[in-house]
Amino acid sequence: MSDTLNVSVIGAGTMGNGIAQVFADFGHNVILIDLSEESLDRGVAAIAKSLARFVKKEKKTQEEVDQILARIGTATDTSAGVAHADLVVEAVFESEQVKMDIFRTLDESAPPHAVLASNTSSISITKIANATKRPEQVIGMHFMNPVPLMKLVEIIKGERTSDETLEKTIALSENLGKVVGIAEDYPGFIANRILMPMITEAAFALMEGVGTRESIDTVMKFGCNFPMGPLTLADFVGLDICVNILDVLHDGLGDPKYRCCPLLRRMVEAGKLGVKSGEGFYSYGD
Ligand code: 3HC
Image (cartoon, rainbow, N blue to C red; front, side):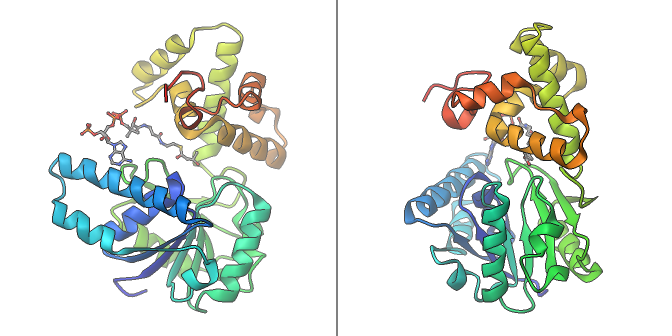
């Protein structure tokens, strides 16, 4: 891949807009794709807000920010939005069916040389690649939230991903200033296989009265030097996403150690999804 790429990012939510921001920040031409103009407007506004924080901290000038924003275009038509892409990064919600449909469209509409990446947090890359006739060019690029700040890209090699695609993706991620961790294609890969059991265990500790939410978070934050306690982190990630990933781990690995805490599930059923819904283990006002 040449130095400046045409990158199409599918999904303008938290992960998608963060991914678009980082690619544009590093000089690539980005097209952010979502179903509605409203979603795209929200995504671009989130990027502008994040970049404004860097200006405030004097890490970027307003002129640099304007150039970054000028490199980001938008589209509501996926086929048109990926027609000139060297790389597509899909970052829509975690539905296997939706991702399979999108990858079928990408295969039909993206140029033959394009690498097709998914930011999935737990769905099999091998399975997603089956929706295309180029499984060797399909790979997992799992960014962490908040994308502009978190250093990791977990790269997942599907059963049929070629070494060439893997090497290109590693080089590209490192050129974005990221650190790469490579995972094989097993449920939850590395990050969520290790993170989610801690989150569900923290919910069990709360449910069983081992400690208050504050105690559990304080012990882990200050005792293990994590930036956030596990319950705060669960709210930040989204409790629905945590439940979804735990179910993928439990189903895919068949081991009861990945079982989702009933409290976590009950909270999701009640619409308590964490920061995004205004309430999770903690309350977030409006
Ligand atoms: N863009 C730009 N700047 C941002 C930002 C964003 N999106 N979000 C936060 N910041 C900046 C803030 O402006 C602030 O700057 P300042 O220190 O100069 O004022 C700085 O980051 C710190 O923010 P806060 O003071 O609000 O809060 P923290 O000190 O707690 O830092 C954090 C925020 C970086 C999110 C930190 O708490 C952290 O690292 N938390 C853990 C995040 C984590 O574990 N992420 C992975 C989740 S798992 C995942 O994504 C995988 C998925 O598959 C589930």
